[in-house]
Amino acid sequence: MREIRYLDLPLLEKLYTQCIKDNPLGFIQRLDLLPDFKDTVREIQKNGGGFFGVFREKELIGMCGVKKLQPKEVELCKFHIAKKYQSKGYGLATLQFIESYVKKRGFKKISLHVSKSQYKAISLYNRFGFMKLKEECCRVELQGEVVFFDTIFMELEI
Image 1 (cartoon, rainbow, N blue to C red):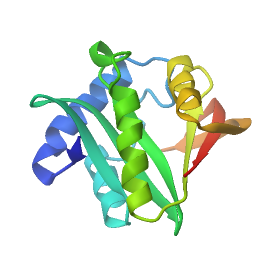
Image 2: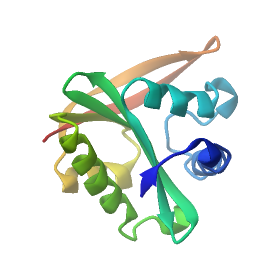
Image 3: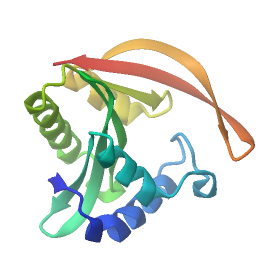
């Protein structure tokens, strides 16, 4: 696992696109409604967060971002593991890495939101110690289109 560099961005974008296509239960499946992925990664990095690639040998198989929300809190975002590598320990290893990364930087809390239909992800977060804060139906407007998601909000105190 390592921080994403500029040269990694095309591979990262390709993996992100594939993960979205492989995950029909996720939040937003219409990539044309989302901001440019490369800009999203750069924005997270520029604002005090980090964006990481999960590698198996030299192959990029996963990703995860931590977006700084407050001086002591980050949000876990864009966490994806390629479908053929799921349920093989990479998600857990990624969460362990992220916890260590944010702890070293003085953060005290990791928050996240996940679609209620993402059973495998919710199970992973629960096993890792994330606590459910609330559930709500979230309304998201992107480029004039409105979509709704049953969402679970979770956090981990470090």
